[in-house]
Length: 169
Image (cartoon, rainbow, N blue to C red; front, side):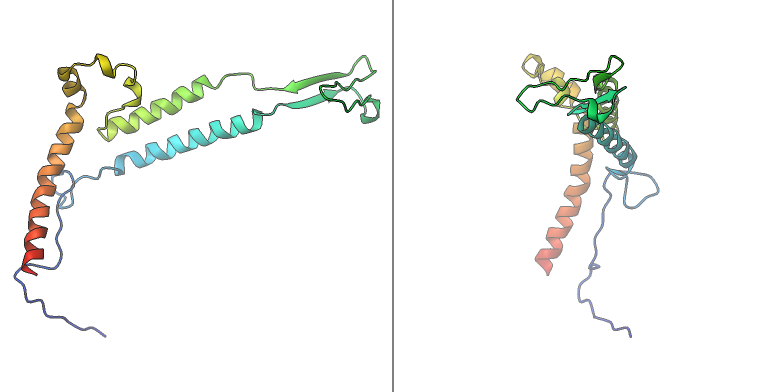
């Protein structure tokens, strides 16, 4: 069952505009479409780093070359359980690296997301902000400001049209 509702105004009830200019596309370029895959990769790497830290935060003590009954147990604080067998070994299962390469890869993915989205990485320059001149800041933020200016031009026209339609309604 279909019904129709008369529209008494000269403009359609729907308005749309481009996000960022893209030839041949009435909606324009997406801000996030290009970074979704990078974000998924970054989430995967961060999850793996988190898993490694969780498993190695409390090293597991392992022993070889003895039976459980061979342990001489002392329950006092800071005690050590002894094993009379000469072939027995007790050690902690510890992580053998500092995760620096994994963290560097995660930071590379983060930087790639910021580059693709034309966003300035404030965290990478936190110790240099006081030393930057006005010209240096303009150069640093040039691409992000150009993107913002384009969006403001497109959005400004759309907001004017929306306000016009609201006043008419």
